[in-house]
Image 1 (spheres, rainbow, N blue to C red):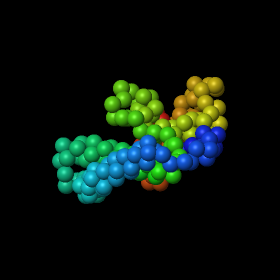
Image 2: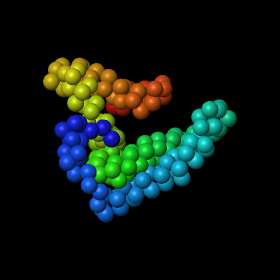
Image 3: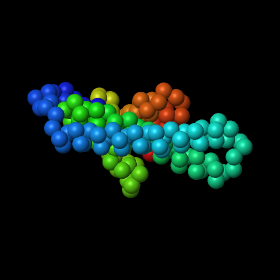
Image 4: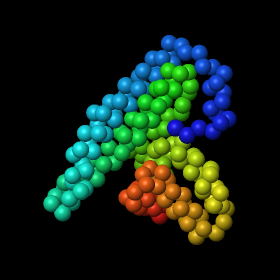
Length: 172
């Protein structure tokens, strides 16, 4: 998770481990490991060959691979985030939740309020607002959204697929 110094530094005043922090830390680490090792990594082994040779698969397989890839990316990112939060808790730090059931969102806007929450805030505050946000002409607001989301796609992976994914969310 991405934290501002003003939110992080108060953690330094309360680093004493206690039973709740240890329990919470172990719970988060185990949950993150389960997502990463039992779901994300095996899913990658199934999905990667399909995306490597899409011409040999039927459309149903490609659709399921696309859905599976979304689940894989979620379990990979949220699993790693949960493990980081768990280690932080064991050390006495509070790190914010970063994923709040994004696949149950009813709109794209809600999805981005639930997906990689701290990155979304960072992109909004440091990229979107710096570009002028929505306080300017409507075409510039749309351009600012496209640029911000494209940068968010690049952050998720320095690969053309993630950049295109961010661009797609920007034009929605």
